[in-house]
Length: 253
Image (tube, rainbow, N blue to C red; front, side):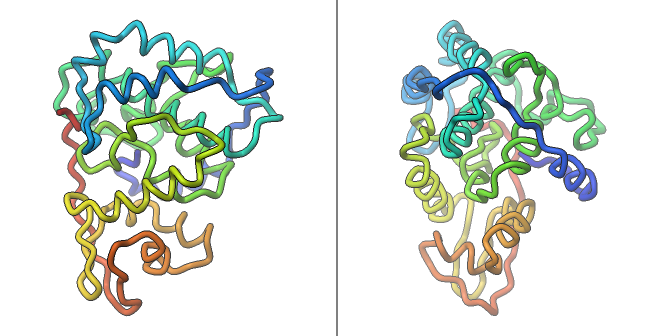
């Protein structure tokens, strides 16, 4: 997820130079292992039992190995590719926490003075996809944002923090991706711990501040129009959006 995105030019630079994969996998791998893990260790609110993941570390690593060995192929559908990368981001984020547990915040895993795309936890090279060593920022900015104009990814990526969209209790899968992402968007905006949607005085997640340009540029809508596609209450077009503080404490049960 986004951290200290005051370096706007860096974001533009990195998303402009996307990473593309043309793996040899003829079909997307099954994500059943991930579904089994999150059903077991994630509650209805999306909070995580990290001690449970530690106990199931072998099963987690087995799924991560499956992802590493099956880079997206050029013949995959766009939906299969997006689902793969969402699952990879979320699963490798869990690994990052598990490998450094206990931790109060994912931000504590980097140096005190962090610079986006240089030395944050999201810039740590700790896993491979195919032969390429990757970071979480690579997945979010140089793969998903650079190659797919799908703003709903921002409701699906989980950065192991309280204010992140909840970690879904099932894997994302290509055939159902559109419905899954729409459900994530609606649940996120209806969650009063993350958004206070009001017609006249809306207070919304800082995610809409971080990534509002994706939502407007990729859809041709104003940010309020975009939010209203999924919000439980329609915000008046003349309303001024206020952004809630982002809670980076770990999303632990």
